[in-house]
Length: 265
Image (tube, rainbow, N blue to C red; front, side, top):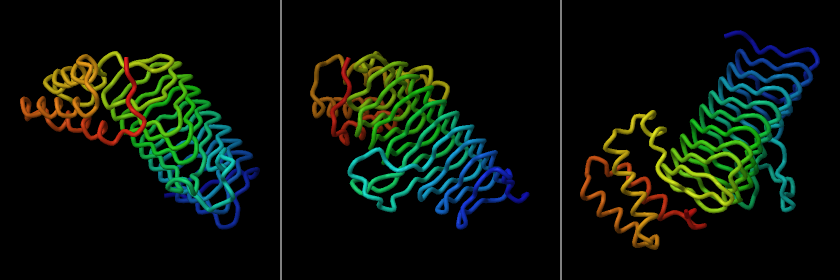
């Protein structure tokens, strides 16, 4: 591939690593502890600093701030990090902070995430792959979002919340408790209203999978069971539908790992 292309007005610190084909736009600044993978494009007026490792083929639009220190008064300059995978898109004014010593010390994003304008991803967030976050989504610290989740614009997520795989959060939601996999809903506070059937169908889940997950939703939210009772009932549902058991197991695993409690209708 071609060598990195850096605009004459950009500043790249000694020690920064730019892979083949990286482009750095006008007036952008790349810090000394930054590594950027091949083919990544950094638009104009971006700042990428901190101990930040970025994979290949990402695109940072203008005015992004990546790898900044945490907005956390406990941060004392520890060499915590940010790790970004491959093929992600960061639109205008996105901010992503490094981790803190009070957690795992690293903020992580996987691959092929679509991060729209003005999104904030705070310290120690752990994001999977294929996630969509619409304009002005605000993530507090220590949040986990699993693969294929969608978060609608102007939504805010409380610290330590987890959002499960394939969940869909409607715009302007306030998410204060964990959102299990496959759920769709919205509100202040967020309330699930059903299964993200359309999204699941698009991602290869069979009609039988979707139907069993609808039954799982009824178990979880219609029978007025506590979590332990719901997990037992979901296990019975698995036994009745062995072909669809893996889809239900992901829901069981999430419920058993939840520490904040789950969002309720």
